Image (cartoon, rainbow, N blue to C red; front, side, top):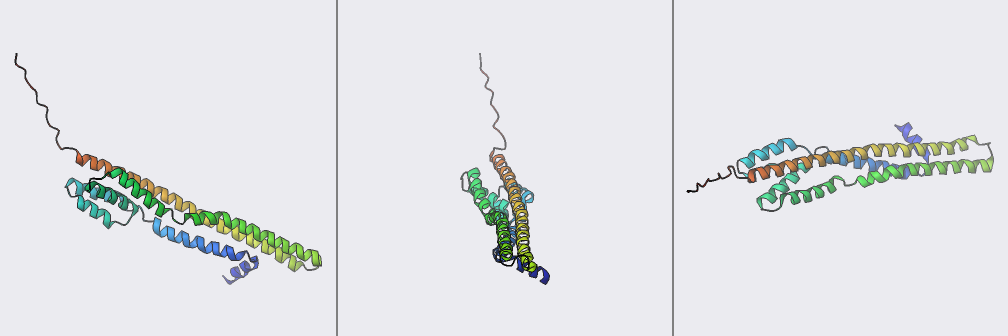
Length: 218
């Protein structure tokens, strides 16, 4: 570990912003993982509990089941049930709640997207600075100080490798987060549609009135 840190310290001043980028990327990935990993849990089980409660005519029980489940799916379904109990439009209410939750799910992903682009550029800057350092040594003392020349080249390569490593790591985390958000939104859409169909089903009369045939006397 000390050897790695010693090697990284030879990358020049550009290693400072690269270190900041790496810490930010790691913090965002960990935080987003904790938020996204269970954001769609309980969908199938929850919709089954809602179905049983609504068929028994207990809308408050169905709402309580949603409020007990801490997930985005439950949040959207709870919004729909509240709208239903208050006589408000269910579809529009759930759509509004979905948009609000989606904003929360996408939070801080811009940081990762920025680091994916910024880290290689910082690495390239370190490469340029390292090469400039090497050429300065050559211009002053020629090739009589090979250690100084190779030090500049090492600085360039270390900065480039570090920038690319951070960018690759951030890109993997960013793509996982984006794909996870897509999966959660698909699950939300499915369960919201199921709830709308269920509410439409229980709102229909159990038995349609029979037609009375009228006999016309002649």
